Image 1 (cartoon, rainbow, N blue to C red):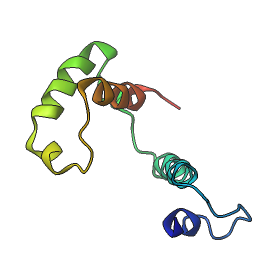
Image 2 (cartoon, rainbow, N blue to C red):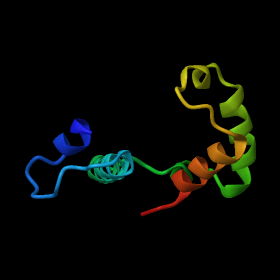
Image 3 (cartoon, rainbow, N blue to C red):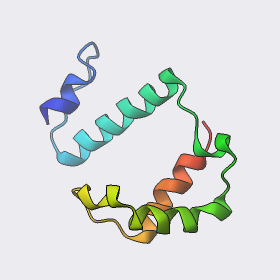
Image 4 (spheres, helix red, strand yellow):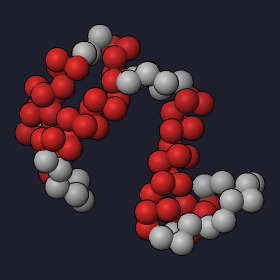
Length: 88
């Protein structure tokens, strides 16, 4: 859990005590970084929710997912892609 605590050393936020708290702290940090760096969402490239099932299938068939430490289902990949389409 030290990584999550190190992400915002300037804040007075308590160090995460659980893996869930650590994951939430890291996700919050990454969301802020994406906003700060102005990383475009997938929708800004013309992708729509209709494209998600095919993208998920292609992602799961891709060699890059073989090294993922967590095996994802098609539904989980679709959920990630739908979130990446959202703006804000």
